[in-house]
Length: 142
Image (cartoon, rainbow, N blue to C red):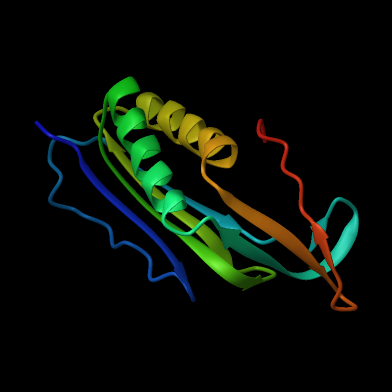
């Protein structure tokens, strides 16, 4: 059976993937929503601004999704990643993974997100309350 992969990178609010109750061979449907926190490295922020290496980011994200499906016994992986300004509390990353059992899905989700932050050329800036921007560095293990 071939894995279904859906990848989207876009500017604007995320239209979440819907649940799929027809999956009678999948015991786990893992949903991850990455949200913008109110602080970044101890600073209060109003938003994060995401930029991408256009064209390359989507190619690398698709390759990462394919790699995840090869490494882990999961069935499908859908991912939406926002670019542009994302306000505090809003979702910037939405991922769904379906698998037969929960643990393989959990392992795949964790690995996918860590690798996304390492490999996919999407960068973020923290927008402080005064409107200034500072680079938002990521610890790839969290």
